[in-house]
Amino acid sequence: MKCPECQFENRDGAKFCKKCGNKLELICPSCGHPYQADSIFCDECGHTLTESKEAPSVDYSEPQSYTPKHLADKILTTRSSIEGERKLVTVFFADVANYTSISEKLDPEEVHQIMDGAFKILMDEIHKYEGTINQFTGDGVMALFGAPVAHEDHAQRACYAALAIQNALEEYGDKIEKDTGVEFKMRVGLNSGPVIVGAIGDNLRMDYTAVGDTTNLGSRMESMARPGTILISGNTHRLVRDFFEFESLGKVEVKGKKEPQDAFELIKTGEVETRIGASIAKGLTRFVGRKSSMAALLMPLKR
Image (cartoon, rainbow, N blue to C red; front, side):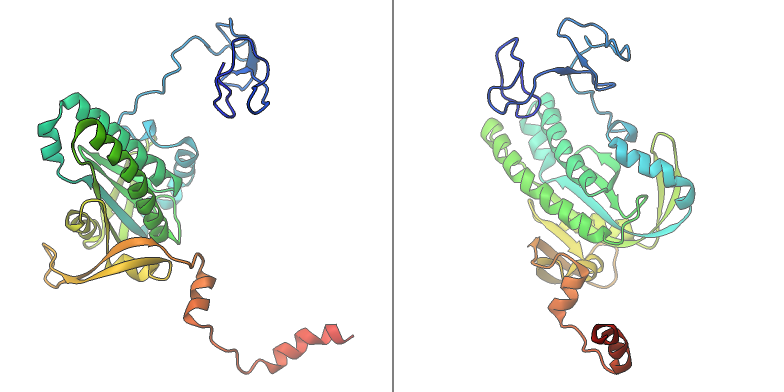
């Protein structure tokens, strides 16, 4: 029997894990009540215990099938207050580099399995930082940070998620190359700007109206990024420059934009983690004209 705590495979009939000492018992996935190995139904809630243990398949066209329950509950609880609101968000785009070439070299079923694994990495990290996946494409995703779940640090969250995804994909890509002989890397692009939140359905389908070129510039950043890297716009850089390390690419020509745009390659997290830390790093302004205030604070200490 496999220990639910440390995953060690114990002998049949064992009552405690020989590796970590955890009590071994079967738990009903519906109500959490222990049950015997020969049970067909839970005697506490009646849940069927003989159904397949395999994880349910994900339907990428149905948001409720891939959105974690705690995040879905937050969205549905607050949707009436945020529908129609103008919000500042960070748009996240990711897609597979050289996807057409990979599809030509491998069997369609192999490509499907590879993308399922990549999508799981993307979903896990995006949801970890409370981003919401707005759209799946055949070889990538579009996600939003800052709406419908509002976060002041939406740009930071998007950057943390992007770095975590690229780190995880590096190991995943090595495995794919070893198994299939093809190189697997993804490009990520970020841009920050306003959007208007539209209707949010019970199935978590969401409508957004981008203000200006918020999504367009994010998509352009992704298409211009080198495989395995993260490219962010000047809009996002201004919000997160104190918290991460970057390599500036200077002004770059962007399709659909009259003027060249600032672009930065996101390298890694910096030493600063909070706004206070960022202020300290820049240098704090010295207080002046506070003699009366300081005297009032010190007076109780002198009594």
